[in-house]
Image (cartoon, rainbow, N blue to C red; front, top):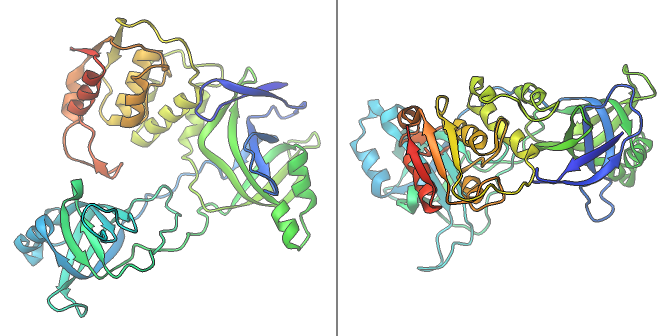
Length: 424
């Protein structure tokens, strides 16, 4: 079977790989590298397999974290919040602070700090007390979230920083502190310790890694290292990269598979990373025989899976000639109850069921510049626009740990690209 693998941005296929006969009917293709003895290559075929156990797991909600600003001298809106709050209000929504950036002080005005810092999101003030560090300063207890790509990520404490600067939104000064506890941490252990490639037909690089299993030298350990991007194989044999789906770690074993046909089940001790939610598997069924045939299939999903729908749409997007300027498109706004719903709906308005036209504000703006199905200026008829008016409002988006993307913001981006919007 010949399988074509899509490019990294989910556009056009790059090249084709010949997959040997596979009795289980492969569902996944792994492209990456093993051993890392040479310059890293991410398009080497490693295996086709029937299932990947541990790649899709529903994790519990990320818990809120506790921080302490040690030896803090609050300023501006932060100080005002602390001064007007009675003790009974601490730890309640009245003590909500929003986002707080922590950085090194700038060496002089107009110069960048030596350490760009970390950002805390959805911050709530829990309490304050006189500090033993610095006369007149306070220790302030907070809870919220550290902005990280993956909850297992390390957050490295900077060196040679004697104190920290605190900033609010739009870099509003919030004061300084001598230290921060609870923010800096080492890499967390894997949330899913092992990934298993079931019904696996290894190619030569992965077979070499399996040959090194049981050897105890550093060289053999290096030869067993694997990092592969996962591609889903559709019914017609085409393969499309799954954005953020990676198998990375150390090959630990290979044994005969229950799928038979001389296939192997390969176990990989996983590197720290978050798995994808199991709902992605349901989303992929709608692309298995080609693009979805119906609009609004995504409407029954919650926000996280709507986001994953857009990621799958991005992976299946291919470069096509933009329709001519002046074209009219219809956006079904009945289910635009969140920003993820808008990206699903506008993708289908421009490119049909399962279409892609941005996954965040920057990507949406890029799509309006061309090569994603539409040439500006164009006309967009936004049906049932009151749904978005009621839901895409100013505030704080606790899923994204950022100010909410409003309908006015979206209309402004459209206007910058001379798109005529007809709100119905």
